[in-house]
Length: 476
Picture 1 (cartoon, rainbow, N blue to C red):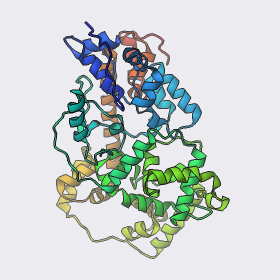
Picture 2: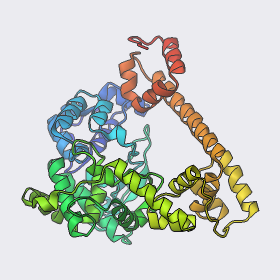
Picture 3: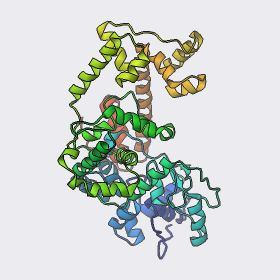
Picture 4: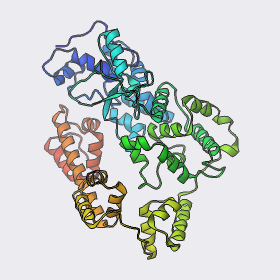
């Protein structure tokens, strides 16, 4: 039985999830699934999705327009702020048609391979104030943005709550506040919050603004960007954030030689996750207002300032190769070459191997016993950072052992493949069990990433499974 409110409550800045969860909890049923069925006529909805598929249904319940929910209560303005106009229109149309995965893909977020937020977040001061003012708490939209860990209004740490799909949660009031915050954390929160209401940024103009500021900071000339120096300075600037946010650590992984932040300049038609732009803005500009002024003046920047273009990748690779050969011939150690040539250790080893040059060995920091333990744990697929923590060594020590065993690298790739296959199969089977209409389109909408991974890597099993469950419109 559905218990409708005469005037459903909708607070300023409240998330779509918060409103939907309140409606579901107000329904008198034996389970959350049953309440979802009663309220939204779909027991399998994922209410905490960044791009929820139930916007039209919720708008009808709340007595407001879909546009109002999308622009004022969802994260869509944040994720679309750096996208091009046609991508935004495709994503918005898909979102209003209940096609969340299509909207996600249209904005290029699938290609970025950056994970979604693992937690719901709230400010304890906000929650206490909400409880006093309204008799209940709710989730604020700006607190759910990626990399936002502090409340801009109260300058305190946000409390994280693990997402639970079938358990609808709300912030708890009267929790203690933690005001021990980092300057960079506060700056990231202010920039991310500002993007929610800033409108759309044109890529070409945005890149001109970045280029001018890089030029002013001595990180670019009128002909090229000093990618190595830029990366190293950003790597150091976000050192604390890298330690606590896997997505930031992934972006600044030194195993990737041709990645962020250089790739934002490769094409003004490319789509990049907003996280990348937020990190660049935080590093280059004093505050969000400084960035907005710079962007507004980008069209007046002189040609000499704005004509900052990266070298062709072939030229970068050739210069890198020459530098490494030069330092190898000087008989420098691996660590010294990595530092001086600004390349990864893997690159140095590969070039040395191709030239038949033996690298100068440095003093061992770990003994044979520890190396054996590292090797064993690498063979069974332990993550390098976990091995380092358990054995009390640095991650670079573990990676150095791994680099000497290419066969273990291949083994670990197979282990990761089998684990991913197992997870994707389980996820797809769980989704199939919850479908009432067995069509491939509906299955892809519910678990797009797992479906596409299986389609590319485990197609025989995928189609056998779909045939066993009598899916219609099945194409090989």
